[in-house]
Structures are given as C-alpha cells and as structure tokens.
Image 1 (cartoon, helix red, strand yellow):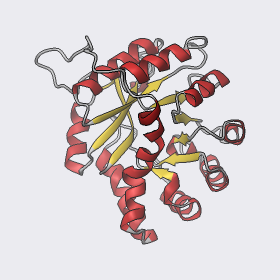
Image 2 (cartoon, rainbow, N blue to C red; image 1 turned 90 degrees about the vertical axis):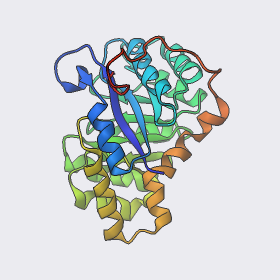
Image 3 (cartoon, one colour; image 1 turned 90 degrees about the horizontal axis):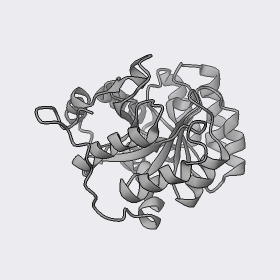
Image 4 (cartoon, rainbow, N blue to C red; image 1 turned 45 degrees about the horizontal axis):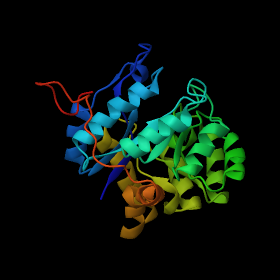
Length: 271
C-alpha cells in the first residue's frame, strides 16, 4: 500500500496565498490514482478557526473513509486553552490520527505536546527551518513521535535539511517526510545515514504532483538498492506504524453524519 502522508484540503480564510485560500483535491486525486497511490492523509489549509477547518476536512474523509486519513490542524497560539477540546473532537468524532502544526503560524507548545501524548498521537510539525528546536522536543517528549516535513525546510534551506539528518540519526522519536524536497543528494544522504524506518512518503499536495514526488522515492530506492521491504516502509508502513497507537487507544465513538457534504454537481474531492 502506498500512502501519501502530507496533503492539505478545504478552504482557508486568509486569502494571502494558496496555503490559506483553497486546497482543492479534484485534480490532485486524479493524479494520485494514476500514480498508484492508495491512500492520502489530509489536513486543513491555513485558517483562523481550526474547529471550522478541521470539520471541512472531516467531511471529506467521512465521504471516502477507505481513501483518506485525517490529521487535526492546530494553531498553538490562537487555539491556546482549547487544544484538548479540538483534539478530542478530531479523534473521537472524526477518527483523525494525528496533529499538524506549522511554525509559520505559531510555534509548538507544551499544551499541544501534552495533548498529543495523552491521545497517543504523532505530530507532523513543520519547523520551517528552525531545526534546533527538534533537540528540545525530542528530549522533553520522548514518548511523542514527531514527523518533520520537507526534511526540515520547504524553502530548500540546505543547512537546515543537513542539520535534520543528525536529529534523525540520534533521536528514535524523530521522523521526516519527503514532500517537496528538491535536493535529491540530501535526501540520499539522509536515508543512507538514518535508514528507511525514519522516512515517510509525502507530496505536500494539492499544489504538487504526487506522481512526481513518488518518482523521487523510486529513484531513491534504485540508487540505494533498497529492498522491497525497505521501500514499503517509506511508502506506507512507517506511517501506519506511527498512527497505530491512536487506532488502538482512542477509536472513534461511532459513525457520525457530517453536515458539510459536497454540494450536488461538484466533485466529492472538492472542499
């Protein structure tokens, strides 16, 4: 099974760029099917109210539960004092399997980490180049699995990406996704040093082509002569291993009809 661990969905309310305006899935999911990707992990576009944005994503996941997983998007600053409530709804009502935080909105906090620990959730934390913070997170919360997207920097900061490799090697609870990493040589070095158990395939859709991102994994496997078992770790098994405690400890409380169904005449993938 091939699982894309990193894709945005739904409407944002910032209107400053694609990341906080709209993340439509219609074309993206067509590309994913053609690439042979089986399932996609969704979380919201940037928003000022993640109770609203997570509900949008939940409706998309609920409409296609065999196609999608969901993570709860959290803004640690705006959501301070209600993180537990947001996560409880996300896990028990929506069946979400993790938390997504982006440092550009606000840096991660103890409230977010302690909530993740209580619910046995992984945190996909975009550090936006601030890789040194990972040392603090790994030490303070060794029971939380942190997934660092883009090898530490979406903006191709090679210093940050190179620094992340050391954290991947030294800390058992630090992982990385491969989404939008353009420096293939750094990706090769990272997998060679940290091993395939530390990496998750991701695309950063819907604005990237998942087939192009998947080709990087195929090229990586060829260059490093990865076994079939090691390729499967990166392509999906590592993701499943990281979300498994959530499935066991905090199952959804049962089917719940969501009101945000896709309007008639629109693709079921369109937020």
